[in-house]
Image (cartoon, rainbow, N blue to C red; front, side, top):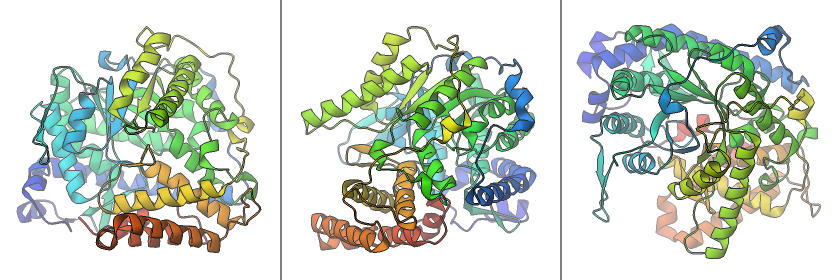
Length: 535
């Protein structure tokens, strides 16, 4: 590491050097990611400052609309660049973190696409980040293998595997393990840069390419910076323009007003848009957190059949198909319930209905979180979409207004919903603080997005003095009481020794701080990152 730092003045690594980190952080790879940071880091900070200014306007009562300055882009008849062959059929996509066993199982799952996730299902410990990059490198070269230490079972890749896409972290996240010129570098550029440097040419040699998912974008200007990064990265490696393909997750309420513009900015590199439903709900609550007229009911009532969610989904499909690119549906968070056939059938029936809605609405693919749901999703899409995609199906009859996208979801707030939010918040944060960013809770696969919904609803209900349907006010006292009850339940289930060894006390401390904060904390992963005990 010392030699490397001497070669890169102004670069520091607070984390200890290991054999694994030295392997993936080669001198050339390091120079590349540091170069990305020095070229684009300031633009990233400008984007974050623009977000903060926009939030102040929203807090003052401003409401988003379709930008008048880009009306011509929305009206003109342009399309994105043609897609590579291995991205034409995306009917079933599976996502998960980048640990070795998960990568093998996901690539072998029968899904068309595997999105390897450095973001919402990953705790950004140094070991998780470095191991994830090594695991993906090995998977691309088909040298990856895994032996389960408990069972002795050997995992290896099948002959036919899913196409790999990688989701780097969002623009808002820092990478505190790499300090460039006195500041933590962009986590997004770190994740993208390392993966691209090590694997872009290898992927092309194997008949695929460097494909990405881009999270948390709030404007077309944020997409423009990604496009500039792609152009520079391709030029640096001697690759032709348009080699990179990226699907953008439309998972913020503001981005839903600029979907045409996002595709236009990335038109050489675009692989379409995805309906990131869970973060979208969180974004809706967050962006209008100051407005007491936009209080959301229990999470279970905020389904894709509500007016604002359905409007956003149908508009996304219409825009993608007009621009000749894929529209990918949302996540089925359910997981198989092995010990309860009745509950399992109910869950699978709900998944089936959700996927049937997506494909009949016009989506070209969908997401699942568990290999056990791949066959079900494929069956539904095969039935209704025998061709590789349905981009040719234009939704010219869809007319979506700003009012449609901003229509609040009405319903009840129940003690069950309150308790569920607290239980999910505690359970997820405890897991995240242990270094595991994707965890099954209450028969759902939860990641940071669903934890964000839970804590943002708690904040919204408390700070706007919402009422439960039984008339009680949701205040800090009630939230504290229920949290204490949930902690006591967990303590009793785990026992003294296991509870004390867990991260539940720290998770409870963080959740209380997030709910009590007078201002809405933008992302729970930012304060959680500061509390990570492990590198």
